[in-house]
Amino acid sequence: MDFTAETATKAVVDSFAHTPDPRLRELLTSLVRHLHGFVREVEPTRAEWERAIAFLTDAGHRCDDTRQEFILLSDVLGVSMLVEAINDHKEPAATDSTVLGPFHMVESPARALGDTIDLVGAGEPCLISGRVVSVDGTALPGATLDVWQADDRGFYDVQQPREQPPGNGRGLFTADAEGRFRFRSCVPSPYPIPTDGPVGTLLEATGRHPYRPAHIHFIVSAPGHLPVTTHIFVAGSDYLESDAVFAVRKSLVQEFTEVDDPARAAASGLANPFRLALFDIVLQPVTA
Image (cartoon, rainbow, N blue to C red; front, side, top):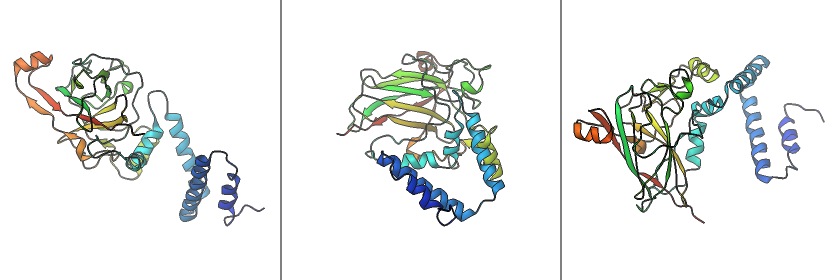
């Protein structure tokens, strides 16, 4: 039959009618209906559609083992946080989740409790400490914490391979018998997401700033519990109200309190004064 503006959607949807996986069929048919609806609404010219294809092609070219431009695109369009919100079926006591971000590395270096993840030592020193517990307050010994952050100038190690040693700002920690964790670092700074690719071009074209408030990333897991991907945001940081990727949740904003105590600083292996952030990470048990 003729493929016309009137018959296009039905023709494509019908082509997926025999997809064996019912969920895949649902996803594809809904995608087609919404995509066709968008095209009908905005009526793009051929040149505009070619530009859109070129944008996605450029995004693909920017992706490698240290950068994910499509995650960045999902983030700035609010899709990443929308997916988090839709899937947020946790109990109120459990720690809120937020976006993964484009610079997570699976092979973060294993470190001992109390170690520093700041291998350069250029920023304001801080101590991060707390417990991993279940929603009823029970400690979760042996919980795993995958931690990563930008340096004091707002760059991740993979963005500056000539200036930062591999693994700077990253660490895999194991909570102790009481579920406690602690590590040293530098206080992170606000930073712009990468603007040298198509996502940066999009933000510039729309008059949006590219900045994220200061934060530290965590993925925390423990047997019998749902893992959580989250951040800890620095209270008082710029851009808490206008995060470029919409990822701030009030419950995740923590004070980094100044501690002026030479003995305590020395015991922690830090210069005095230093900043201290204390918080617990609460995991939800897996339900049958």
